[in-house]
Image (tube, rainbow, N blue to C red; front, side):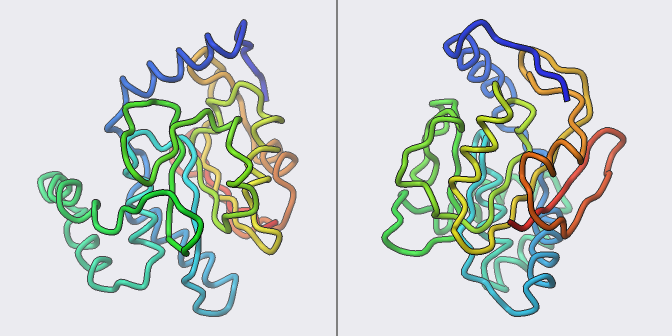
Length: 225
């Protein structure tokens, strides 16, 4: 793992906000990805545990939050719609306008909900997304989540600090970290480069229940703490 250093946090945040604006509507995660991860976690638990609370870190427009909320719910009707409509770009637009907004709730930990997001870009104006640097989260987010997802770890300014912050989000009991990452050269927009499975396992110690090398340099790992 190699890190391209920024001169200060203000410069880093400015670059990350601009990057987010350029790719705001792009989402690498599909419903099929979320469905696969949910099945892997359920199989590991050996029981039908659907009351997950999920945090998506670096979620841009929030599409990941919508996908996780539906994929980890017990709403079979919405899941069927997702299966049918995700095969078409035109129907995908319908999902974004009609289906995804269902059950978007204001951030509150008084009641159980499925998914929340964190995004540094202030354009992510949604009730269920916290506008923040994912290294600087409020203390009332500590110990609140049992599924933590991100494919933005390579955008970290300091991977050790980032991993420590993300681990604080985890409930004291078993939490699943779903981390997707690329083995690419570090840049100013993606300061953490040449990430390996061993790097992720050292930063997020626990039991590896799934790992996969998908498309050339893009990899996935699920770790249970």
